[in-house]
Amino acid sequence: MVKVVADGGAAFDCNCGEGRRTVRPMALIEKARLLFTVNEACGVLHLSRPVVYQLINSGELRSFKVGNARRIPAQALEEYVASKLANAGA
Image 1: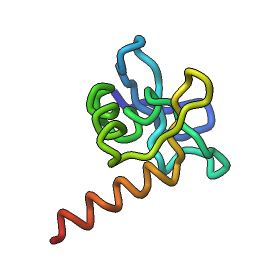
Image 2: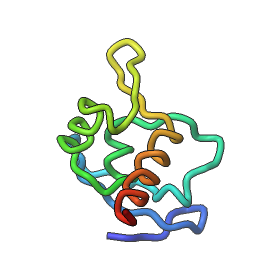
Image 3: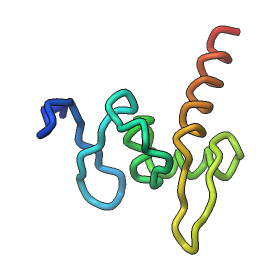
């Protein structure tokens, strides 16, 4: 479900395994944002949590751990999408 958020932008609801939460598409996320949680990444990519973990485990989506918390760089999300677009055109 798409909805308007407080700052006038758009967002959508994501049910990524830990309850329903609102996630913003990449185009609306602040440029200063460097890292995303797995749940945030699944919302940005419109993929399920298990699929995002499969991408991480296969090396298709770069990530790293800080203690027990896994983080995905914004650049890794952009690179993943770019690689899929390049492969789609081949």
